[in-house]
Length: 198
Image 1 (cartoon, rainbow, N blue to C red):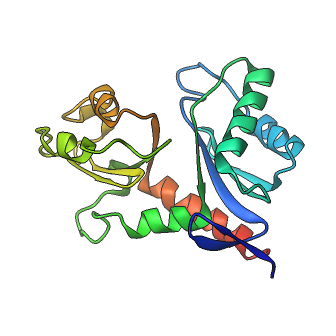
Image 2 (image 1 turned 120 degrees about the vertical axis):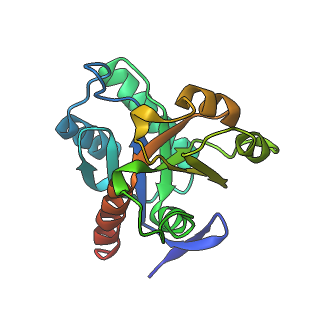
């Protein structure tokens, strides 16, 4: 099968990409119906478009090599049709798989998937951010930054997090959007279904 080198590894020409939109369909704001979002992606020539839940999760196949450029195209299209521009985070299926493999909390017996979050960062944070996050007093919560992912174990749930997300994101210095472990695994399953079609 034809392939191309991308970010240090080889991808098929039609790569599977997971797209996360931040802040859509929250408390009646930034509304996007998922069938309209799928149609928008198809107009952008994205293939086999699938959505998950109503919170802006899209999986598709694309021949685009430049994910930053693709994110801009999706953002432009959403802004043009819906009148707002959400933060858009893209990961290839391979990157998503790697993020799951690096999750430091997965092996624990006491983990409750809805209380285990992976925050996908729009870009890599600056040097020193890991140390700043490590200096926060977060117990009983745990935060681990690894590359462009911030893993959060929140035993009392998001609403009872010890450190407000606004504080965490300010330290990160880059935009991010989080998904709980149930959504992370479901999106991987959808991506693998699309990979199997290649």
